[in-house]
Image (tube, rainbow, N blue to C red; front, side, top):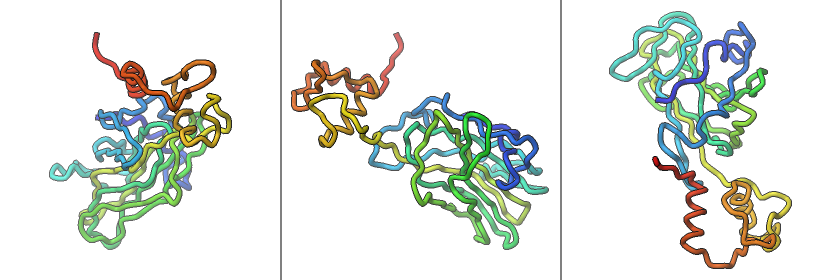
Length: 251
């Protein structure tokens, strides 16, 4: 189970965010987290969406009073005040955040759950919302509530940290069980200059060759060239795959 990296103080960023402004501390960056370790599994590929999932039990309560977990659903329930929960979201650097989902129940026409995704700088400072607050409204019943970013956000773990926040008030069958952040991996944009003379800017393979070079996976074939049309040996393939995947095994 992924350990939340946020505490109550982390969420006391501003009244505007609906979080108690007791310390005006910013989000702790998640740059030290394992880059591709999502839920204990490695995630690869740029064609499909990947989902980061966190159970409500993974979250810190930083405001309000809650009752016991709903053991049948693993849900969190607010019993007094305005409850607030949150925890860190650890995604690979360069990934595009596409949307955010909340699994919740709401049978109360006068109450609702509010959820949003935030980011904050590594150096303490104001946090910002990536996705505006979304409410469950009068459902009724249990459902998955979805928010989509108008423009995908590119994760920058070297400068920012990311977290989710859920607010709730007491009500009839008002509880939440999971949050899910939907994202997609992507290849870095092509740089304005070329590393290899035979793969210049504008070459159809330029972006991808530059990604390999910048990642330390290839140094080319010598003489400042990459030799894009040369055959690849099984030995060279082993170097490419092992370096790209970071393969490691016990000695």
